[in-house]
Structures are given as C-alpha cells and as structure tokens.
Length: 264
Image 1: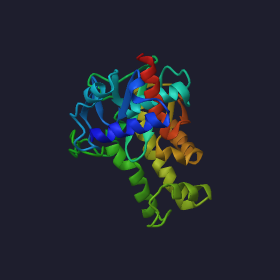
Image 2: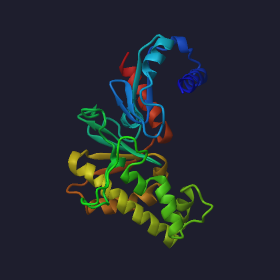
Image 3: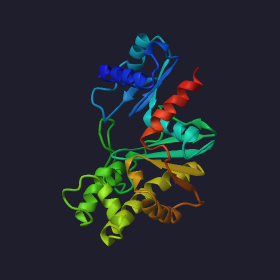
C-alpha cells in the first residue's frame, strides 16, 4: 500500500516537472481519523490504519511530511482557492458515497480532542433512542451516510421509479430532474429533507455562517441545493449561507498545497 502512495507522488511530481528530491514539504490527505500525523482509524481502507506512512515518506523524501484527513484539507482548499475565500467560520461537507466534514473556527481547523471531529456520516437522525442502534469504530458506513450517501440515493431513485435498474450513476437522476421528471424531483426532495436534517445538527451547534458542499453528489447543482435550503430553513434558528464547491475533486489537493506552503 505504501508503494501505491509513493508511485502516486512520483507521478504527480513528474507531471508538475518538479523532481521529488527538490520538494521542501509534502502534505498527504487520506480518509479516516488522523491524530498527530498517524492513521488511527480508516474504516473505508482495510489495513491502512497503523501504517507509519508519514515516517516512511519523510525518510524517503528527506523533507517534512504532514498527514491529515482529506476533508480537513478540503476545507482549507475551499478557503484558499475555492468557494469560501477568507471565511473564518466555515463547514465543508464532502458528500459522496461517504460523508465527512471539515470545520474552521476562527480561521483555524477544528479537529477535536481525538482528531475525530466532523464525522457527520456517523450521526443517526432516524433511529429512536430505545432501539439500541449504534456503530463501532470498525464499521465501514455510518448511519447518516447509509441514509443519504450516493449508493442510498441510487437505491431510492430506483425504488421510486426515477431511474432504471441499469443506471448506476446518480448523474442520471440529476438529468431526469433537470428535465422535469416528477419522480426524480420527488427523490431529490426526499434526499434533501434527509440531508438537511443531519446538516441542521451541525449548524445549530456551530453557527458557521457559511457551508460549502462538495463531493460527487454536489454535482446535482442548484436542482439539489434549492430543496436543501428550503428544508434547512425550517430546522435552523438563523440563516446560513450554503454554496457548492468550486474546486470539485481537486479540493483536497488544493488544501494539501496550502497546508504544505504554510509549513515552510
């Protein structure tokens, strides 16, 4: 697995025409809980937790290497070059198969006592308190992302007849909604209601002022954002501006560059 990381770094350096040996600092983004530069928990990548990635890379490269959660880096990217220039209080939501959040408070990343802050995907907004439903640290999917992650959206769209069984990409759902399909619009409204309920929990606690939504699901654009805002309005006390990411899949990489530059 380390060889895959090293190969990716070599390829990126070659594409940028920057020799690996001339790097001054490197920042690596990865899913999971990253505490003090070590991978403590990574449910979506079996065998990844506990590997001394930072030490191995630093020994190979001969420069400082930093390791951070991918979404924590994405929020830095959106603040530096994306949808949230100079925002001091900001929540970035990565919405794809998984759901995570990066948080800025007073212009600084907030990671929590164990660097596990922002795991929105594991919030349970459905089960009653007496059902005994929970999740252990080794579980791959959290309750919220099982409800509104990309796979859950695909299944709901198929169940409600908005897309065909052969449609494996939710882009088909967004296209149908844009064409005015009542079934597709109904699916998006239900997804938006579910998503707003979980997001409202964060907004009521943090009052960030600005939320940026990224990840694959954000490609739905305004046709998904509008019902989210409508449902959020009913569940929060003060208005919160919500924007779609301007960086797309490059948000984490952009944040990693900002992080590395700040370290030299």
